[in-house]
Length: 113
Image 1 (cartoon, rainbow, N blue to C red):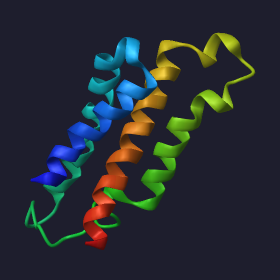
Image 2 (cartoon, rainbow, N blue to C red; image 1 turned 60 degrees about the vertical axis):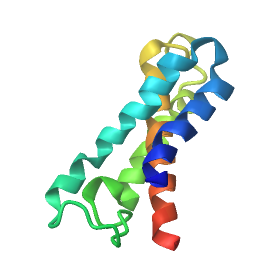
Image 3 (tube, rainbow, N blue to C red; image 1 turned 135 degrees about the vertical axis):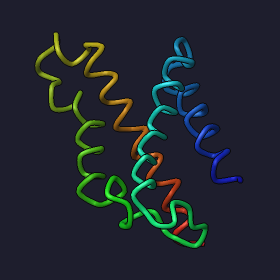
Image 4 (cartoon, rainbow, N blue to C red; image 1 turned 45 degrees about the horizontal axis):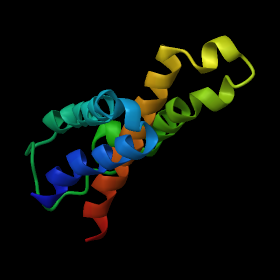
C-alpha cells in the first residue's frame, strides 16, 4: 500500500519544488505516467507482490528507461533552439520522462526490499 501512496506523494513533492506556480498541472502530468503499468496486463498473474517489475515488464526495461531519460533530457538537447526549448511540447515531454524515471525508481525500491 505504501508503494502506491508513494506514486502519488513523490510526484506531488517534485511538482511543488519544480513548479510551485503550476504544481497541479505538473503533478497531473507526473502522476499520469503511472499508465506505464499497463504492461503489467501482459504478465500472468497480472499482480505478484513478490515480483520485481524492473526488467520483467516491457516498459520497465533498461532500453525503455533510456528512452525515458532521453525524454527528460530533451530540453538540454534543444537548448540552442530557444523557440523549441521552452515550448509546451518539450516541457511536457521532459515532465513525462521525469515522471517515468521516478516511477521506475519507486518500482526499483520493491526489488531491493
